[in-house]
Image 1 (tube, rainbow, N blue to C red):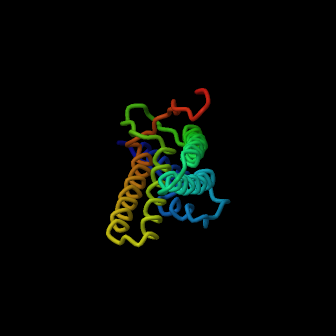
Image 2: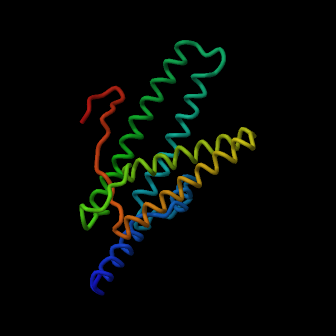
Image 3: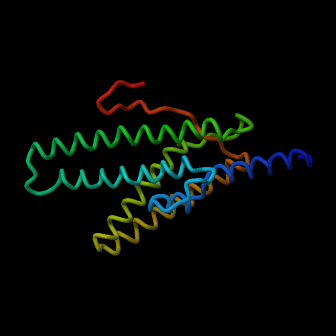
Length: 185
């Protein structure tokens, strides 16, 4: 590798690190305590919205499983879950569209990651909500496991950012095919 190629790779790594937030910043965004004027503000703002939707879905699922819930209450919970999922899919696609425009691979020869950036951020939000709710339930063993799973996923996200920056991995581009009461776009 020539000195110029090494410098070009270093610049790509710096660019990606400037564009993509670290997992710690995403987790901080789930709390709603992040600076919205930073470069990756779309990802962080969307991460906060995803966490909020997943908490609402957690609550709707609990309501549908409540002992004594009527058929009408269960049906209403299901409609609420579908509406939340439709919004979630839209938010994931916002991140993916942003990533497609801003996080480009210099070559198609590098391996493709298995998930889109939006999907990974969505999974982080799910894991964070799970860990938070289990911790609040008082089940210490399950809370430790949920936290460990969140940390493993956060580490994997940071590895992905590092691999993209090093030109060793690229992100897929796709759109959801599942609809929640509407037609596929």
